[in-house]
Structure formats: C-alpha cells, structure tokens
Length: 155
Image (cartoon, rainbow, N blue to C red):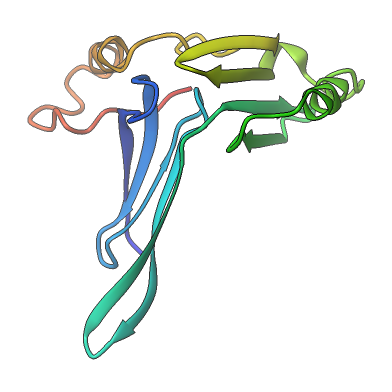
C-alpha cells in the first residue's frame, strides 16, 4: 500500500506530530510523540464499491519512550490520566540496567502542561510546530521546494 508521511501540527498540543495517509484507502494515522495524541481512521470494509471507515481518537496525556542500550525502542502513548501506582511502575522500568536513559523519556501532558518525569526529551521536543517546521525547511532547504505542506519528520 502506498502512503505519504510527514509532520503536522498536533491538534492537541500544537507541537509536531506524525501523520501517515494511505491515499488509496483513505486511511490516516496521526501520532504525537510529545503529548501522546493519537488518531486512526482505518478501513472497516468495502460494501458495494463504498469504503467504510472507523475512526478512533485519543486525546493524549503523555508519552513514554523507553530506549534500550541495543537501540530497541518501546513507545507508550498515555491515553488516560495515570494513577500514581502506574506512574511508579513505569518509573521503575527506567532503572533497568539495559535502558539508555539519555535517549529515553517519560513525559505527562495534563491540562495543557508538559511535565518531564524522567529522561531526556529530544532536541525538537519543546518546539512549537511553527518553529519545528521552520527548522526542518531550513535544514532540508532545496529538497522540498513547492511542497510547503511536506514537513520532514525528525524527533
């Protein structure tokens, strides 16, 4: 299946999110590695030449990116407010000796506010989408001429 993937402004936090659109089936996925917002519009079935879709949207209450020293990564989107026990359980995972703490982070997003509980978010994490877009277009100057909608993706 063919798709287009690019950065967009997150509808929840206003930072950069990743959108992938499968244009032949009109399926869309949006994921924000900043606030945890995630959206899916997936094909449910085809009936008499008409494609029926199902939509799911999760507001996002944060993100946990756990990177292992062997570079394997586990991303957890927080779809609901977490209880203290859940927070403590995730924090404990950061103490494992195989965790690359410098490339891992645990961030909550509650009432429009980010809180870094553990780790180190990426260099681009705190940029507004406008600033992120400007940075990416400058970095890749000449590669995306006449395609200002297409914003490259970097963490």
